[in-house]
Image: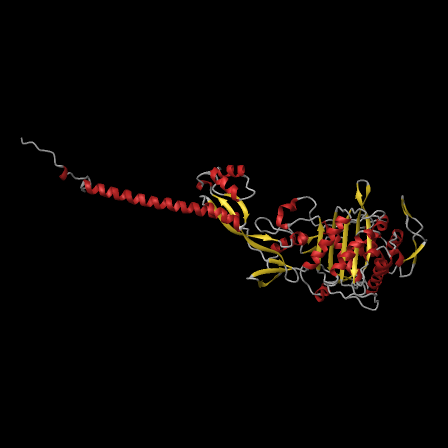
Amino acid sequence: MRGTSPPSDMSRQAPSGLPTGRLRFLTLAVIGCFLAVGGQLVSLGRELTTGSRMMTAENQIRHAVSRPDAVDRNGLVLASDIRVYWLFADPSQIQDVEETVERLSRVLKGIEAEDLRVRLRGPGRFVWVKRGLTPREANAVHNLGLPGLNLLQEPQRIYPAGGTAVHVLGHTNVDNEGLAGIEKFIDAQPGAATDAPEFGGRQRVRLSLDLRLQHALHEELTTAMQRYQAKAIGGLVLDVVSGEVLAMAGLPDYDPNRREDALQKGLHNRFYYDAYELGSVFKAFTVAMGLDAGVVQLGQKIDVLTPIRLGRFTLVDRHAKSRFMDIEDIFTRSSNTGAARIALQVGAAGQKAFLEKLGLLQPLTTELGPTARPLFPEPWRNINTMTVAYGHGVSVPPFAFAVASAALVNGGHRIEPTFLPRSRAEGRAKAVKVLSPDTSAAMRRMFWMNVENGTGRRAKVEGYRVGGKTGTAWKPAAGGYSREVISSFVAVFPMDDPQYLVLVIIDEPKPAEQGQKTEAGYNAAPAAGAIIRRIGPMLGIAPARTFDETVQASY
């Protein structure tokens, strides 16, 4: 039997019938395709990772949106946006953490090196390094050429006037969202009060504030706070016809460009968001209430020397020099017993209704939100009627007091206050009549007399026909009252045709000179006079030396 030899390599067949060489080629081709696809997947994965990091960054800054400028009534910028840079890192892309932290610390101030090292070594893919870089800082970081660092350009709010108007403007957070004041209003009412785009297409929110007046008010309050070594001070300038707030400030305050300072205790707007017992300035309401109710008339004599006894309480006017005073003297000499007797004739229910009509017993709401809630007695007894008559036993926010006071001098109309521009015709349309014109005319005369010859003499400003009322209130304390006071002065000018009201409140003033007292006539009154002396020319008020009673009020 003839044997058979094995087939040669050249004739060897693959199970599929393909030659072995061709199978190897096909196998290599398939592997190559898989490698190419794998490479694309890796590349795509990197792109997705980068995209994911960018999406994460976008999520971190999704609220950092541009805001409209805030400008004063004359178009001067109060708040605006600038472009700043935010620096973030992807720890997975950083090759040398120590080098990265060391080199960043050389070009950026305020970097907490140890904290940054820990975060860059963490498992996350996104780490904020620093927000709010200046263009110079951003350029320095860019020039480092370090892997894993990325820069984003974002808006940041700035306030050119610093803290001058912070208690009106408020401030924003790091994401450019409004946290307080007008900034919060802008977010709550988007587009509600924007001017047509100007200055490169930017929207603007125009306010009723006048930056010139705001600066003068802030500066005079600063001077008064230092002079009287006060704990705090506040003031405002109000148009008594339109209801526009032309200026409002308080100290201590903070610079909104350093928003973190807002967290410090006591830097809020006390003038708006706190309520105080204001003392004898409330006698203006008591006298107006008595006149309007017809229970007293000008020239009527009232017993102020005889003590008033009510249960276990006795009220004595220790400053009365004669037994009887007429209504005008009760106002200008600020008699407690005189005011109490007027209020008792009106009665508790009538007094409460009168103050409610003036808007003093409920929070007042403007673009800044609601004011502090007033505090008043419940039930309202005769003893409360007596003390409220001279400004004790009831606490109101000074802002609401100022708005109510406007009705005493503008013809008897309770105005609707606003921090946005409004014409006087619009103000009249929104106002509510709460007093007779005759009562308002009588109050204008008494305000004038009080500055000419009464407790408000130190508020006199030559040529500007100022009227006003002083108030000094002991501060409540545990078990009664302390010896520290809140002093206040409400001023109006020009008194024969009232247009503007100035209110100054000083918390715990000290005597400025030896022999002086802490009463409002020695501090709040001269402070108000200094403000009027500064702002009168800015408001275009023509000086006059006499009080013209024939001129009708603006209403």
